[in-house]
Amino acid sequence: MDSGAVVPAMGAFFIASFLKGLTGLGFSTLCLGLLAIFIDVKLAIALVFLPSLSSNIMVMAEAGRFRDSFKRFWFLFLSAVPGLLAGVWFLGNSPDELPKAALGGVMFLYGIWGLKNDRFELSQRQERNLAFPVGFVSGLVNGATGSQIMPIMPYLLSLKMDRNLFVQTINCSFTINTLVMMVCLGKLGVLTVGVIWMSAIGILPVALGIFLGGQLRKRVPEAIYRKMVLVLLICLGVNLAVRPFI
Image (cartoon, rainbow, N blue to C red):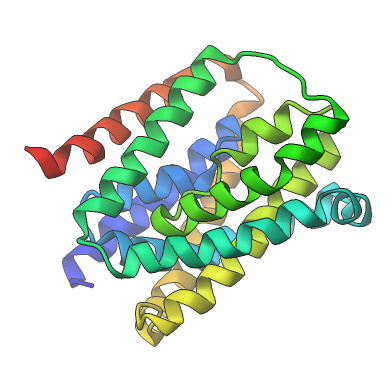
């Protein structure tokens, strides 16, 4: 990683965490979109590991209901593993432009979905039938792009569960996927000692950003800023998706 990219990387950590604290949107997806503009997407995925993992663990400890979540969604979590392995293989055996374009597409789709905010519900039978494909595709997208939100977030939002169970479940998925990805990228030689140190340092601006964003959220209407961030995600996604073809 070029020394000139360190300050922009710390800035990306802060911006993404600040907007997550303000709106509740995924830290990893936004941070990866910012980092991938000026550094290799494989390196960007590795740098996001520790800040993302630490924030997930803090949220899981606060939400509770870990046993309920794991009992209900263990098959969903397990289904992501083969998808992760396939996604990491794609990441390690493809030109850098392809993962960037894929990440851009994921960000664009999530932004459009968030703006539409369609409400729909799945039955218990549909929940069971979709567990494997949703888990596998989520792992595949995560392994290939580093983004952890599609399609598992729309799937979980469509189920009847309280907020704490939803938060615990989505963060369990994020954490398990992150740990598997960490091992896989270590095998690819991307997760070096220097990257780990840089990722650890990134926890500081992330903690500050989440705190400040949370404070501002209490004073400013969240809906307005949520739409702004979704529009930002769409713009970043389009930029990454079309760049290889320009």
